[in-house]
Each structure stands twice: as C-alpha cells, then as structure tokens.
Amino acid sequence: MSTNKLSRRSFVTTAAAGVAAISAAGVIAPSANAQLVATTATLSDSDFKAVVKKPARIKQVYDIIPIGGGGFLNNIKNSLNGLHYGFGYPTSQIQVVAALHGPSNMLNMDDYVWKKYKIGEWFKVTDPKTGQPAERNIFFPSKHGLKYPSSSPDSEDSLYQDTSIQALMHRGVKFLSCHTAAEEQARKLIKLRGLTQKPEEIVEDWISHALPGVIVVAAMVGAVAILQTEGHYSYITVG
Image (cartoon, rainbow, N blue to C red):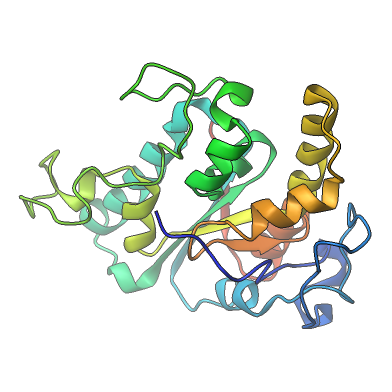
C-alpha cells in the first residue's frame, strides 16, 4: 500500500470561523509543541475548501465514529448506487464525504501505522486472512485491485459492489481524518501501553502515513458543521 509523503496536507478550523476565515499555512514539524487544539496559524485547508465548494447537486456527509467492522462503507456504496442507478443522478453531480473520527479515524492510515502501533489489537479488528489482530488496514485494498471481471452494478465482482476504501475513493468519495481525534488517541495509546513517546511524535507519524487522498481536518465536529452550513451537504450517521 502506498504511503502519503505529505504530512498534514489539509486541515480546517472550527465551524464558527466559517470557510472564509480559514487561512493557509505550513505543516507542523514532529518536534513542535502538542497541537491538541489546532489553529489557522499552523494549518492548511485548500483541499477541504474544494470539497466544501464542490458544485454537485447531491452532497452527503457520513459522520462516523465507531469502526463497526467497516459496515458504514457498505452504506456509502449504497448511496452512490442508489443516487445514480435508482434516482438517475449523473455521477458528476454526486459528492459523498466520509468524515471519520474517534476509532474510525484509524481507517485513514496505511499498513505501516496498523503494524507499528498494533491497531488491530487496540480496536479489536481481526484480519480475515490470518484470524489474528490486523496488522494492516484491511478496509483499504480492493480485492480486485480496481480491475473487475464484471461491469454490471448487480455483480459482486464489479466496482459498484466493492466496499473497499480504495474502490470508494476511485468512485470519488472523499475521506476526512480528524486531527483532534488523532491527538486524543495518541494520548490514550501512550497511557494504555506505557509509551515514552510524546503525543505529537505519534500524531505526526500517523498523519504522515495517511492514505493517499485523505484530507486531514482540525476538528471533525467543526468540519461537519462547515460541510452542512457552507457546503449544503446532507447529514447521515450509521452505527
């Protein structure tokens, strides 16, 4: 799996600031002070702004906290299929966003993070190939590698029934990662395992290994509000 070499490429501030108040800036070095509350002085948000302003007719944001076996990925797939095939909207006029925070935030990270920090053991995610706690992001790769033997939306072997993050990204779904959640999770992990690393060192390591295409935002609860009020996204959450 490819890793993302750009650390913290895109963030947003709180909803109260609004999109117009968010300003671009540099990235945070691993040695920086802890950034439990991110600010516009240290963050960049151009990718997120593009998502907010996307000129699509149907715009939907999924607000996801629990991993829940990745079941929400099937819901997103159903949204894409239903809107296009069931209601006749062109794919160019559909934008779905997956806003991941809490435990689900780790689905935005690549295999390096899952193996080094034993994410499967931490969040009780089992790798179906080994029957052991996952040391890879089992939710990312497409079993077909985006090369499908069928083009029928009714076939399990088509893109349209593939619930992997890789396939959903290929279909245009934007995945957001929460900076605040990463900071909070790093602190929990340090306490749980008695680590000597500083929280910011762990967060920087995680964010620098986000999946390609993932957009990191300062606080997901703020990002969701901006998507709803400024971007006119409809809201949905699934358990």
